[in-house]
Image (cartoon, rainbow, N blue to C red):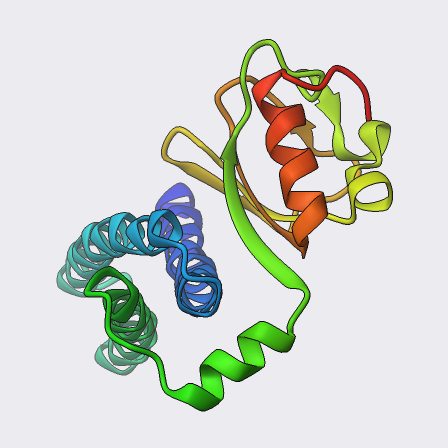
Length: 195
């Protein structure tokens, strides 16, 4: 019974984390005109929908078994519904990018003035990033690109720190200067062998 409670708590936390990441990705896809990042938001939304249904089943089973009362189940259901609504909103933002909707001139002007880009890059097995931690490679200080999330298969790591190890096949989501993006792409692909 205790393990079920931990699982439910972890699942609800995952909905929260994923929906927050989705908002960041959605706005970034729009601001930096990046369709691949917008597509990631769509993929994450499907995953959050699946989590939402799983959590509903767990909560309703706990209610049926008398493990939680009606008031507690309502609070939990509202909490997970809120995360799912945030995920839906993020998908709507990303949809603007995927449908090639023309941005308002004010937004375009602010983008031109920004020197920050947001990128998604896959780490090749030939990359010097493989099997090293973010702290070891000092990516942010050397390239200016800060890794804000890593996707490894279906698992996500948000706000990775210096102890986070990078593996071949990882998808890095990073932001920083345009010249840093070019360098990160070369490093991650294995074309550039030193930082």
